[in-house]
Image (cartoon, rainbow, N blue to C red):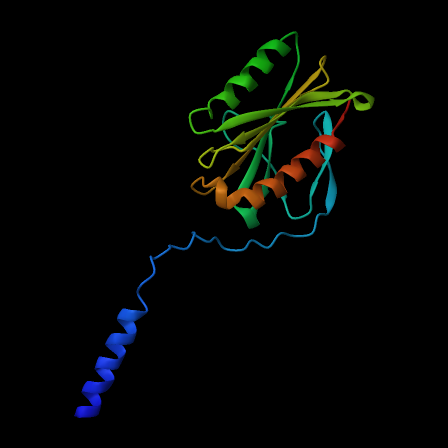
Length: 192
């Protein structure tokens, strides 16, 4: 019995002596995300454009009621993400489409810490536009773009995740998919 009391007393003294430092909480950790190897495949459609998309994505027609025949989605099942994009022919209404694209991007201002614009100019294929990077941990669509040849074609895209936005933890995936969007833009060709 005397040994039990001694052991309890010893552990109590050691426990109290070891608690002389302030507790420092550890930062929150996130699950490591395995990113696939970058490989691309050409997408040909009956629509007046073609491009390349990642082999780990799924190219599907947009089946929503309000969509047109040349609206498509690129799904990234591994990341629970989807790139929605819509095509419209230009009939003297390019300014209207550009304003609509700007307004749709600006709807994210309330949750964004900033919106960076990158100009797209590929003269040899007549591809012009803007790539929007929407910053902030709660922005619903961190990557958006619009592309045009300025006379006949207008294409708009927006990347969304099918999870609650926490772009701090999604940052590696957002950067990874932004590269895929850039590749799509760099390989875009307008058809006559």
